[in-house]
Image (cartoon, rainbow, N blue to C red):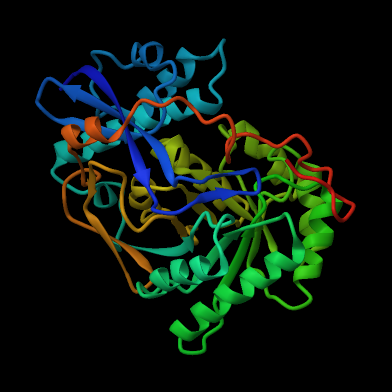
Length: 383
């Protein structure tokens, strides 16, 4: 079997409500989702969800190769971008190709990827994540009621701009999940998306912890601030979760050495091979690993095969337009199916009609506000 070519598509996730975090909000609730398809001479096509940046240059590393040699081809792609750097969206493109290759390998074997990777149980524990900072109280409650109906007993809220507002919103969601869990204590997490300084983080979380039990605080300070993350971890009761924006094992090393991470995260768009390597590194430090992302299907398959998986992020309850996935959510978990490979089907016609080709928004969650990390005084303007 040989790789013969690739195609790129862009579809959209339609949330039907505003989504965002402390850095900004998509008010229309429409977010682009990039897709890479890798073709072979045996008619098997693999699907990867991730960016297209530098796709042609990266594809040169795997063109004509046997796609089943996934581990070796992953390192070939990393070497292909050695001088330019394999970070950010470029690392995402490598991850998308890598995911597509794993999809091909499992399809060729006639097995779902979770079984090919050695997983025993097709169920993957989940937590709810509504990207909800722009919601009213009523919208917030309704959103988490829909998660609770599917058995979710843990939730991660976006916050970090106002401690009393965060306390109020976390309490609302706690009540929703407690009722659904028949009185059991739900898990509550808060994601600040790197909007704080070290002291802001400790003050904010410590104040919340006077009345709330937080499972973890996510990205309290900048992703590379190993000493700062360690200081936050020492200063609060909650675990510190981070890693979704780190793009190589070399970036995790200083955080682990400094004790700056308690929950090791990795983004779905970085690919299966990266997740497996990060999970092994975390396991060597007796730390749990948790995948992050809107459609983390590939990492859900991989999560079944690692001993230290904690829980995976469940964002939207519906997949992107034109994407069908062989999984469902029940009893607080993703339940993977038996379709060979990742179980992803792409309706290219539906995708073509869904995306309007708009450029990136001038603001939103992907753009860091000017005064981020400089809000020690109450009433500081944050824009």
